[in-house]
Each structure stands twice: as structure tokens, then as C-alpha cells.
Length: 117
Length: 498
Image (cartoon, rainbow over all chains, first blue to last red; front, side, top):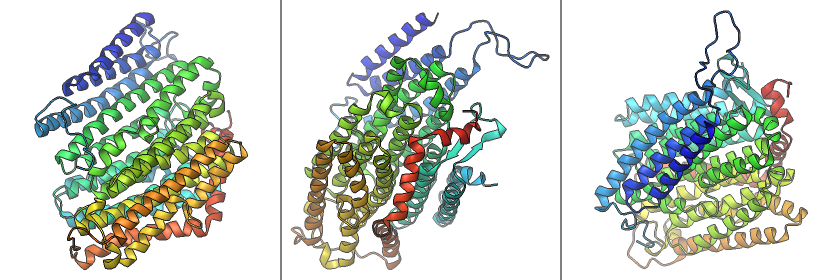
């Protein structure tokens, strides 16, 4: 299972980096989005996959059952998704504004910080 | 109840940010709230530092969840010093902004975002949990995004696109590293990681530390990942850029120092030779970049990079003296750099430009400002007896002791080139006869005072650190010893069962 998910993460990262090398500003954003999903999946996979075992503690027991899923990576991912969502929305707005200001969605055509102005 | 001092800086800043957001259109109440909050934070920081010096490392666990399961805030000497200096810069920025940004429509939002940023910075300095560190990094990052596009001018948005892209990448790599580190060790507590990470397979540790180093190198603007900094900083209003220059990159440096002393001790991690090269190249590229610029803000932005090199050099040499030098240097640099940006901003406001070609003859109209500029400028270049001299002296001495002669030579050369840049600003701005007709704008007396008081305060601090260096040096040495020998830290956090 872990192997399969690792491959999925790898494909996501590859696609994300490929997109980030593009000139179109929206593709940059898509690249970041793919990359952030890849990272979330990687955290999930690194926390070990134990399908079918809930991390719930029985009313009599003090500890969760053996092999129970680890809830912590999911908590981490949840936090990361919320934060990532906020960042992406900001980036989307910023890129849209940059596109409006420069009339171009091509990063090479943006005037950069021109030396000497 | 000494633990309250650990949480107050974050709580105070966050609640101030929220309150200000709701009254952001009323400039006067914003100023009162903001001013009170930074002064209170200053007092809190003094108590925190006091407690850390007298009672050793301070720890507080949230919600009674003991480490390593709960999130802890820890303050050792290094953290306390960083909190103290952040509080000073926070206070300075608030009062400077009253002069610099008051007439802008975004004035209220500036204060709200600034306190948010301060909360993130305090949190990052105090937390003892690596995922929590990520969260505080994000708080800081989101606030800095907001501050970056405060005026929403075309130039600012251009700079912000680069800043946002590179910081998003750095953030994702940091998050990935945390996830994999958790997968490899099963813990997120920094103190707990110290023992757990050392039992890992060396290959895994090599990869994890590479990821952390990459992520923090972007934040700290190390060679070769510094390009976002000079591309974005010079478009910002001076009050904002002083805050950024003082704090943002230093949080990256703090994180590198923390991770590479506590989690992956630098010598065992195998990154020491790389880091030494990175330090030398960061110093050199920064100062050479500055030499080719003709705008006060751009020159100063490049100098941030070159100064970061000295701090990393202190870490890379990894002896107690070198690390003490690095800590001393961080404190000195924050004060001096913020001050230079404040002075640059004041000149820009007075003369309507920060381009060297447009300026000149400032000495004639404001000779006292020339003196106030000279102190931090020479301190940056490392003239004795100013604060920069001692910082440079410590790192260079330790590089000679460890026989990195070429590194010491590079550091000295960079110091010389820094002098070149500073004299360039000096002669073009203060001495040269203005080529274009450029008369100083008259500012109301109270605005002028608000500009000058922060500058005077920071200059005085530079002089104090330079002339009475001994207690600051002793403090740095103790901080360095705590970093290099983390047993005390681990014991304080995990309660003796380390």
C-alpha cells in the first residue's frame, strides 16, 4: 500500500514541478496546488497506513487497540489543508491582480523589479 | 506563575491584532491599542528574559498535556533574547509607523497585520514543537503577505508574486520534512526529537536535514535562494521594510540554528562543509550585489543577505565561541538594520526619493541625521567600538581558531566592501551637492519627532551594545552553551526522563 501511495506522491510532485516551470501564472498556481496535495499525501503515507482499524478507545480499555490507525498525521494534514487553503486563495487573488495590473499572464512579460527603474 | 510570561507575548499580540482589525478605521484608537500592546509586550519580554537568566529554562505545556505529547513553549537564553529584541523592534515599528504611514488608507490594517506578524514571530521563537513552529511560520507568512501588498501598487504586486511563490515552496518543503520526520521518529517535540532522531538511519537523517535546510534557507535568504528578497523589499513602505528586514529572515536563521543544534547536531548531520561554503557565498554575493545598486533601500536589502552570511558562518563553525558570536550578531544586526531602513525611510519622506542620484546635501539641512546614520552604518561595517565590531570579532576569531583562514579572510573582505557601500550612501546622500533641485519637504514638528525618536533609540542601543559589550557577550556565551549542550533543554522539557 505504502509503495502505491509513494508512487502517487511522486507523480503529483513531478506534475507540480513541471507546471511550476511554465510561464503562465495560473499554471504556477496549479503547480503549487498539486505540490501541496502531494505533501499532504506524503504526510499521510509517512504516518503508516492501517486500513480498517479505528483509533477509538473502548469504554473499558485504557489504550486504543493494536494496529489502530494513527490519528496524528490526519490532524497534521487537516491543519495543513486549512492553512494551505488560505495561502492559495491569497495567491490566487494576488496573481489575478498582477494579471490585471500588467495585462499579461506570462511571468516573463511582467516588468519584474526593473533595475534603476 | 512565571509561566505566564511565555504565553503572554503571543496572546497579547494576537488579541491586539483582532481588536485593531475591528476599529481599523479610527486611527486614534488604533494607535492607542497598538502602542499599549507593544509597551506591555516590552515589559513581558523583560520579565521573561529576567526569569530565564535567574531560573534557567522556562517551559509551559498547554492544557496540561505533558511533553512530548502536548505542545510546549520553551524559553532558553536564545529564545528569550530573540523575544526581547522582537519586542523592541515591534515597539519601534509602531511609533515609526505613526509618522510614516498615518496618512495612508491602509494605516489601520498595517497595525492589525503587524501585530499578527509579531504574534507569529514570538510563537516561532518560543515554541518547542516542530509542527507548531510550522503553524507560527504560517501566521507570520500570511501577515507578511498582507503587509507586502499594503498599498497594492504595481511594483509591490510584482515583488509580492515572487515573494509569495518562493515562500509557498519553502513552506511546502518544510511541511513535507515535518511529515517525514514524524514518520521516521514518531514524535514532533523538539526535545524528544533530539534522542529519537539520533537513532535513525544516517541516510534518512541526511535527507531530512537537507529538506529542512532547503526550506529554512529560502526563509533566511541564504545563497543561492535569496533572490526573492532584493526583488520585493525595496518596494515596501519604510516602516514595513524595517520590520521585515529586522525579523523575517532572522526567524529563518533562528530555525536553522535550533534544528541544527537540537534535532540534527550539525557535525553529525554532515552538512557542516556545505554550510561553511554557503555562509561565505552568502556574505560575498550579498555585498557584491549591494555594491552595484544605487538606491538606499536596495543597497540595504542586499546587505541583509550579506549579514545573514555572518550568522550562518557562526553556526557553521560550530564552536561555543562561534555560536555566541552568531547570537550576538543576530541581536546587533536586527537593531542596526532596522535603524538604517528607518533613516532611509525618513530621507525618502523628506526628499521624495531613495535613489542616490536624486539625493544630496542632506548633511547641510540635517547634520544630526548624518551622525545618526554614521553610527549604525559603521556598526554594520564592523568599526570598533560599535556593536558590529564585537559580533564580527567573535565569529572571525573562532574561524581563525578552527583554522578556516579563507573564511576569516572572506569575512574581513566583506566587511571592507560593506564600508564601501556605506560610504557610497554617505557621500551621495549627505555630502554630494544635489544635482537636481531637491529641497526638503517641511514636516510638522510632531511627525518629525515621531520619525526621530525610534532612530535615536536604536542608535543609542547600538552604542550601548558596543560600549558595554561584556554582559551581552556573557549572555551570548551562555546561550551558545545551552544550544551546544542540549541536555538542560531536554531535561527542562521532558522532566528528567531524557
